[in-house]
Length: 453
Image (cartoon, rainbow, N blue to C red; front, side, top):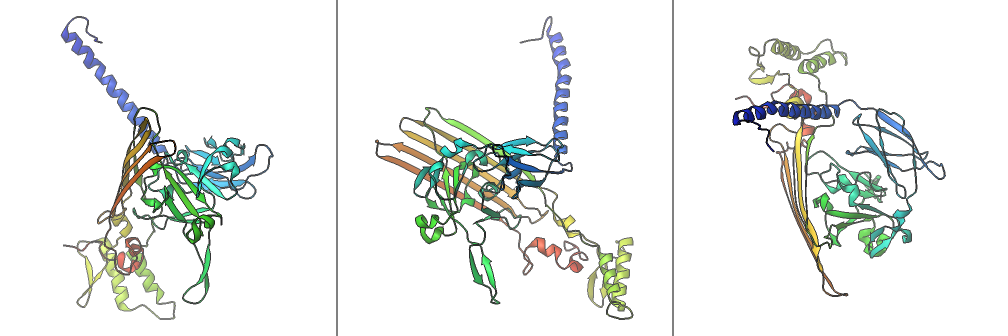
């Protein structure tokens, strides 16, 4: 459609007259987006409340209360009470428990949110994957928890271990550190056995569950979370009757997605971009405060005064802070004594580290054949400004199924995983860069982070 009425010149004038309005609309949209992002970093509050059964008005213990879009979650106590520190004021909490309908509540500045959950009878008709096939929940006699793909979708997670946090009762997920390639450790029911340590004292050991992906033993941390259809957690002793000694610490069964007969191909693409930051950074003393404490400490055991070398080093540190160019270091004989005032965390640790995830999948079916194929990529960088660690994971999956006759079906499942991890050279005996920065502040604060040219 054209806005021209008379001449080409008038047409051009009208089109250029509309162009500034278009820029204003874009600018307004960008400002709204920036305002929305800024609001995420505002200081959030604490929400608390009580969860009861709508039919009996009795408190419900063990209800998971989670802030949507995050891993921030807690559970109600035996009185049905909970308390959750929110990460954002503009938050929505979800309350869910096995056998009850999930409830989502917008916080909107509320500090007390009580909820009444109703039982979900339809959940008893769900088909659960168990060790010897499938079975309806209403006929189960063992302790089995199933997590479907809807609970795993749209969660900002990097691996299956993070996705399972707070979703299954009695399933403990532990992440030892923030390294990009850290594999979460899984444990069911807590302590599983006792043993003696080197000193002869008894200690509790936590065993890991037996994990199977489509019937094949596999480390589930290598999987792409978007390729999972359901996860069943078998947490009672009945698992040993099926899997023997390997199921003594529980069993986790993972079922991957398959195609559906529909006569057309469905193509789906999703991506996620994150910026991570350290949860806490140690606050170290400066070089002058550390050396002044060293000088004053000599009076504690009853000595009259500190050695002259310690006092001279303190004077050199003060002189360096007043005029660094003329007092770069302090000499004791032929040995250099560094007198810089360095915070290694500010210089070596980034405020943000990026990560991204991309997924492309095709699924469908025609006639007697169904198929599901997916490609996935995940990349994450570490927290250090230089010589940082980088992690990349590539996933490919192909599931096809063909029904030959009424009693004969052929399934083909192919799964390819490749992980590439580049890590900085760890200092010997320091236990990693993060610990090396915090240990021996008398060295790390006084000397430059990089060797001068």
